[in-house]
Length: 119
Image (cartoon, rainbow, N blue to C red; front, side, top):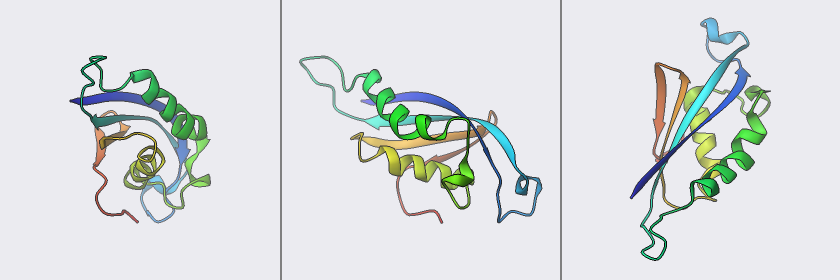
């Protein structure tokens, strides 16, 4: 069963290696969706409680990054590097994580499935 749950946080960043307008400090209303591929427990009829997912995300991502400067946590906080860092924070605590999609703007997103490393 594929379960999806979305989350939001507000954060500022600048891209120190980019020579476009995003070189300067600015902010985004980030949204990301986790996809988990888990079996359904025949006893409960559930794969995982959505509240359990939300607790992990609150503890590892939202609580740390909401209304913060992402440059304090990542050297080069591109959308690509942000989604990889979210994966690194969440994957050890949520089995079955198969995909994270991160929207930096409503019309622009990146998808990470855990393969390879983005630098």
